[in-house]
Image (tube, rainbow over all chains, first blue to last red; front, side, top):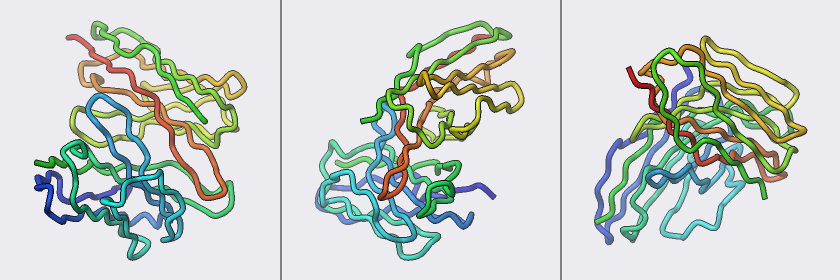
Length: 117
Length: 114
């Protein structure tokens, strides 16, 4: 099973709403990622979790709050978003590793299409 | 900072043609290189992974090569089919002390005409 599952598939939220995106994998991967993708553009890295600890934060605004409650789950909490935050949000995982040589192929979910109104 | 470039940005070919997509990267200190396919509005599907120590990987009609020293990779698609129409993304993985990251190129939008 090489599946990364993201829910919901589509989300419309107002600028004052609070919502969460969820991502789940059961491949035993210990590195998990959030990417943001605007139309006709490549994915841009937002956050990296390694062994359930936040290891990379690409200076993302605080209205995006990631959480990794366990090795299989990754959440992205959203609050007070702006219309320009509308995008496809992609979750990915890879085997990960604290030592170079253990990380491998990255697998992506189908994404959550977020629209902020 | 690692930069990844893909050429061409768009490609339209008749069915049955063999084609080559190009990817170049500025920093040769990569950990691996991965080719993905993305259909409109969908997630990314992994096609091929080439480790930095490898030169080539094959899967069915797809063949990817890697020349790390020159910072180049190519994806060869044999006997193209309309179902191959999609955007193809090249991504390089760089290892940092804080973890690894994938940096993507802008993609090549491929259309295979029946």
